[in-house]
Length: 215
Image 1 (cartoon, rainbow, N blue to C red):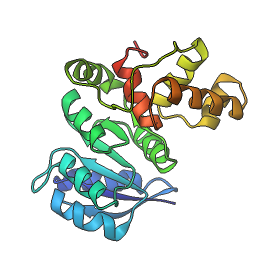
Image 2 (image 1 turned 180 degrees about the vertical axis):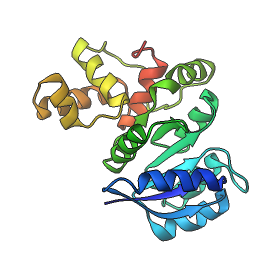
Image 3 (image 1 turned 60 degrees about the vertical axis):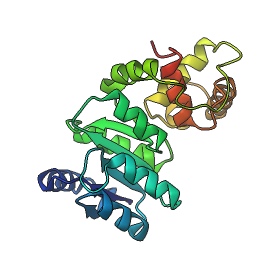
Image 4 (image 1 turned 30 degrees about the vertical axis):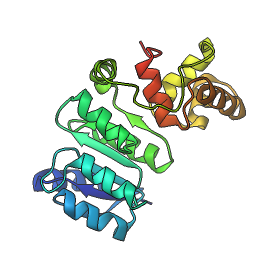
C-alpha cells in the first residue's frame, strides 16, 4: 500500500483527489494539509511514501514546503500539482526537490501511475509540461550543476532509454518496452548518468530537457 499525503488549500480539490484515489486498491490517503505550514508540520509526523503538493498555497507555498522539508531531511518523493503550465515555477520546484510535475487536470490513471513511479523511486513529468519546462530552462542557468555537459554523444539506444526515464518508467518497464535485458538497461542508465554528469535520474531528465536530447 502506497501511503499518500495531500497538501492543497482548496478543500474541493483535496476531497476530489482523495475520492478518486480511494478507488485504487494500492494507494491510501493518510493525511491532508490545507496550507504550507500544515504540510511542514504533518509530513514529518505521518511519513508518507508520496506527497502530493500544490505549488500555490497560503502560509508557505509549495516551493517553501519542499525547501523546509528537505532542510529537515523529511522530504518524501513529492509530486507537484498545479493549475498553471508554468515552466519557471516547475524549475523552482525541481530545484527544491520535487520528483514529479503534473497539471491538476491529469487523469486518474496518469496520476496513479505517477504516484506509483515516485513510490518506486522514479520520476514523473507530464508530457504536456515539457514545452514550458524547456522554455524555462533556456532562460535560466543550468538547473542541475553536477558538472559539465556530456563529454560523449549519446547513442541512439541511450536516447531511447533517456526518453523513457523522463516518462517515469522503471528499468524493468524499459527493458520490456525495448525487448532487452534489465541488466542492459541498468548499464545504459549508468552510462547516461556518467555522460550527463548527473547524480540521479531526476537530474538526468532535467539535463536532457536543457540540452535538447528530447527535442
